[in-house]
Length: 562
Image (cartoon, rainbow, N blue to C red; front, top):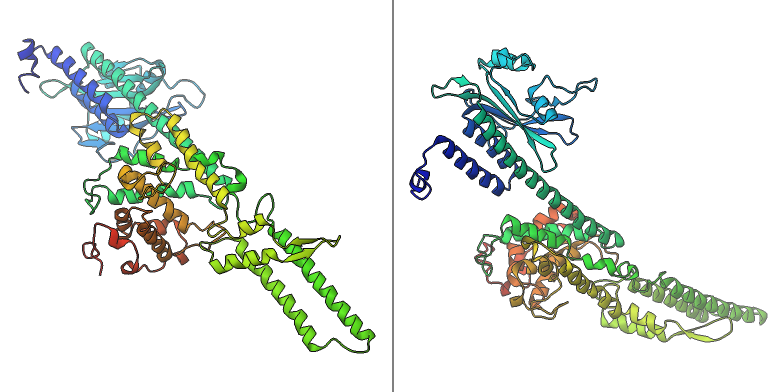
């Protein structure tokens, strides 16, 4: 003990009672600082035994239904028993203690149950001479183990609402000779004081855990609601957190080239996880018809059916024209020559091919070639006649524009609406009074559509302006989108193709090169694939052929790649 901490040097007080109180205060401070529930319980029982010089002790917790007590910690020095906490699991070694008997009457013959039901401390000098409680179980235990259970001090732990949440039972106070003696009044006072502090610590820990559980459930409900808005992006908000944390864990503390010194604590990981769950929360205000647009011509209905109707009119008119020629030839006593028949068949085939092309173009995809866009525009200039004989274009300007979308199914205006979800995400998250340990949630969640060259959205941040966790979310979001198997405009993408596209995005200054290299070389993509991808997507990846890796700080040789 240092001179500063010694009460004898500070006050000259060496009274054992003073030392006991000083120790009680130190324990109270330690209890309030403990965040782990199991360690907290162990500290409560061990500290109570220390302060009262108890040979053994048990800690019970009241079950959620309030009808029974559960053993959570058992300690006995003489028998070398240490169950719960850092010791062996309690398991099913001890049955629950009912607080009421089968007929509904209070179970007041059991000392722990009595203390909980009456909210009072039970101080028993000698269990073998006590008539008020049933100690038959204790005697059976003693007979089996050779132990002698004598003095008992059972203290209820009450929360801020006066409800008993646990019970602390101390057994066999030892005197200087190591013999069990009764607990005196000071022992009871000190145990009750500790129980009060312990109840506060347990209640605080429980409230914090319950609030965290509620908050986590709330964020996941929001994510699930967003996913349910569109069957085509379903599970996106649930899978992105997995990819994010996998990459963050691979990067943390490894001093990977380009990421030296980056490390994340458990609280940091929780903050990032929360951001990942909320990264698309702004989509709650995105119009349903935009999120759910599965084809290029879809509005309330898929307008490809209207286009199909026009082709049917053209085919009908072509058939009528051919039949008229055949009828005229028959009246003239001849048949339609083979050349004309071939001509009509060729036109029919061409119409069928053109319709098939437009139907395929309507489904969207990763890329639409210039010649296909030119074909859409050319078909748009063709015409058809309505029942009044008025001529109309085969495709109107809006249909041509939508069918010419190069990637996906959203046109430029709709894409801006979708991109607006990030503005809404930031606006929503920045209004929330996040506690200190979650202050960076808006930054992390709001950065997954930014680019390394500053051409992303919503804020146009550059790589240097973004934190590593925000850049991690960008990698995770892109990878999930590329490999998702619910998108209607593309087949489930295999790993090699997804990583190749991401490599090109690195070369285009879209994604972070060092995080991409980590993602590849640490095989984070494979860990994710085993959990979320279909077997046919898990093809072989030739890392030496992937683009983008040369821009990373690490070389293939350093990464152990051939």
